[in-house]
Amino acid sequence: MPVGELSVGSDAELAGHGARSHLHDGRVVAWTGSYDVPVAVDAEVERAVPAALAKRFGTDRFWERWTRAECVAKLTGGGVFDLLDLMDSAVAGDAGADVRLSTVRLPGGIVVSVGSRVS
Image (cartoon, rainbow, N blue to C red):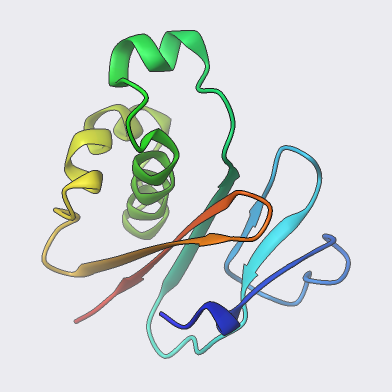
């Protein structure tokens, strides 16, 4: 996944892109690459893991696991409760045979995962 196909900006600047993620500080990360296959993006600014989540899932590579799980949920129509089950499998790369995941770190501590469905 080319990093050059990700953009960080305002909601208004990136409104035309279908695969977007809103950061806690109001910025948006969008996939600006091809939509030949279904694509999902999730991004978080790396920061302290909330205590309840840290207790349940640990802190090692938490934001990477979280964004990967979010991408899988978005691509498969899953909900918030599915994230709990996906946390361990997403970090191991076991997203399912038809989902491909890639995770990068952008300047400013932004962790971004992009998922795509393949047939």
